[in-house]
Length: 172
Length: 271
Image (cartoon, rainbow over all chains, first blue to last red):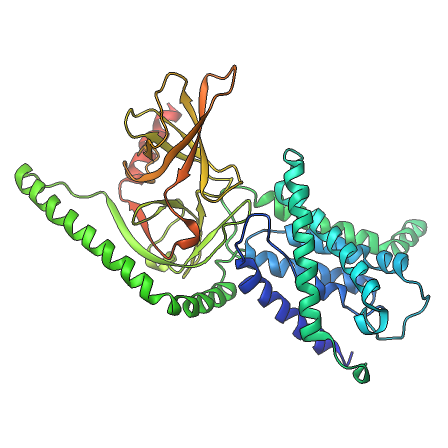
């Protein structure tokens, strides 16, 4: 509970960066990354799954309110929050995590963290862009959008992580 | 009963997940229409204030270029004013304008999504209502879709939910203009009869049939014509005149006689 404030600050920071800066990156219709989902991915391992679902839903809804998308982000983040424990089960090698710890580059290593980010982002982006077009008509256009945004989102999230989250090992 | 309860306790997360996703889908489906709720959009109070602050910081750095643009616009308007004065004097009749213009400032916009929106800093207290037209100094921008007290959101032409009635300037054939979601610079004009003569560069203007926009406001120019075999109508790819990325000040148009026109038309339908 002591570190709750840390996650709240990161959520506010990520949401502001998302709606004020990243949503205004207008290079082409193919590049429209979403970095706020990093907030859901870095929540502690031992967080109650029910709480995780509710947090995911409201995080998505917040972004929806700012970008006029009405539930599309909320649907995608709820799915991500629902599947997160399963992703962690599948890709984690160790059985138990330290209580209160969260996925990080320091403790889990860069390759593991990158794999985790890519799988989580893929689930989120696939559901998000499929819901946005709401049809299978332009399926290749949608797949193209998912893959270019997957790369740019993961890149930006790592960038944010290294600047804002990666602390010296003594802190953890 | 007890078994049912046990089942529910055992799978309570799955139930919660389904309920939350269900809420999301209701939101998505209910707001897929032209009329949207104000509370969950960028026109609500908190997000409106934040966007206004961010936009005012941004526009401070663009003041010089905006000034230049406004000066140019001013001169054009002055010229128009004087020439209109001359015509009015010669006609010697007094026609009360049925369209009222109000200016507004864009505080948030998107151009790279499928359903783009624009947020303006004028709302119901400034006399803005739903379904008013929005233009800028050289072309059509979109239609007001929701209004709160101090802010309003616009469905721009580059939103797939919007159809605008448009015609070809030189021969008056009219059709409906919609956006295919590909480039923010281009749109499609449908329902033009097969025998209409269209060449690249022809200008597309508002038809004036919808009572939202006055006639003869430029929208786009023809880029190329798509022939669809077995179809009686042409699809025309057009280049939009407005650059949505570079748009700051807009004008909201109120048609003072719109209620009267609507009433007459609905009477016709009822009979």
